[in-house]
Length: 154
Length: 72
Image (cartoon, rainbow over all chains, first blue to last red; front, side, top):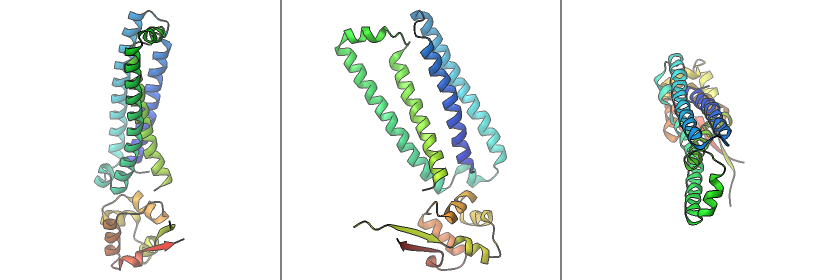
């Protein structure tokens, strides 16, 4: 397994676990008092981002110590091609997420009664959470795409 | 009309006749990773023209001695 493939595996597993737990925690905040839920959501987000950075740095440092070849670390033409292809997949998911979020914002702006209905769900910072969800999904699709191309070949 | 084709290579055979050159040695000479050489040999990856020509140069043979184009 090449350095870049191992790197994709690390990012895929850490992103899925950390942000999977983050969204589970956010979902569990439904029904909590609004102010407390908002504070907790902010804390969860900071924790998830911080933990994600620490885990990525730690595992990539360990990986870097075991790979001493410059070509492996920088990646060759095959690594770059798989990266481009996986980026396209991830970008598609992100694009869909942004468009859906825009449609949601515009729809709620024109239908205030729907906005009241949605706020009853009491997910703190709903629009931000939806955008975050699509961003994380796009990252998971990107890393999965890389792993898929490495496993299957192209 | 769409014709199916595949690029067949004889990299493994060329390595064998080059005094059993290792994948890593070939990878270093060509400037790619060992895993890429392995993927090329297995037919899981078709290299760029640049890398394909470099491989031919390493084995001191013509391009089409290493890579051939087969219509299925």
